[in-house]
Image (cartoon, rainbow, N blue to C red):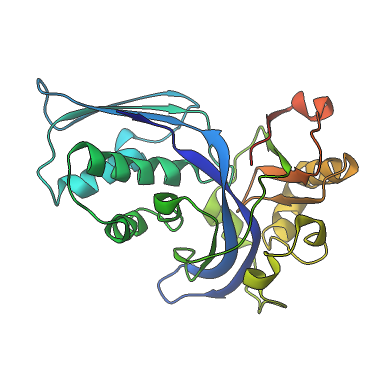
Length: 271
C-alpha cells in the first residue's frame, strides 16, 4: 500500500512562553501543502519485524532515528504487527520547517492502522502522533488548524488558499529546530492569530509574523533576501515556515521566478 505524506506551512508563529518540560508554548496556523514524499508499506511474510529503506533526499541520521521507524516501533510495542517492508522516498526537504518528517510519521501510523485493521480512532492516532513530535498530530486530519500549547493542540480555522498561487523556496541550507528556539524570546501576542488568520492574505503582511525570522534572518540573511524577492515579485504575503529554512509566498496570479531557481529548490502552486 502506498501513500503520499504532504508538507505544511506555518501562517504566523508566536512563541508565547517556555514550559517546565523544556518545550515552548506557541501559537500558529498550520496549512497543508501539495509537496509530497512517497511511503510504501507491504507485508513481508518471509521476514521478521521491519525492513526499512529510503531514497531521494538524504537524511544523515541513523535508521532508528527516522520518524517512520519510530512510528512503527511505537505501534509494535502495543500491537502484534506482522513483519513489513517499508520504503520512504523523500522529496520534502529536511530542515525546512515544512514538517516532512512529522508527516511521514503520521502517515506511517495511519497506514499501519489501515493495513492491519488495528481499529485505532482518529483521536487515538493523534495521541500516538503526539509522542513522536509536536506537529505530527496535525497530519492525522491534515486540515487547516490553529495550533497552540506545544503546537499539538488544535482548533479548526477558516483558511482557504485554493484560489491563490503558492511558491515555496528552499535554499541549500537546513536549520535545526533547537538552534532556532535558542535565539528567540517568548512574548505576549499583540492580537489573536486565530482570529486574524481568517482575514484574506492581502491583510496578513501587516499583521501576521513569524517570531523566528528576527534571529534567523540575522544569521542567514539570504532568507531575508528570498522573502524580499517574493514581495518584489508581487507576493501578497511572504514568510518563513516554522523555524526555516523554507520561505513561501502567496500570490494572486501564477508566477515564475527563475532568479531564485539557481541556488534554491522552488516549488510552484504548492497550496
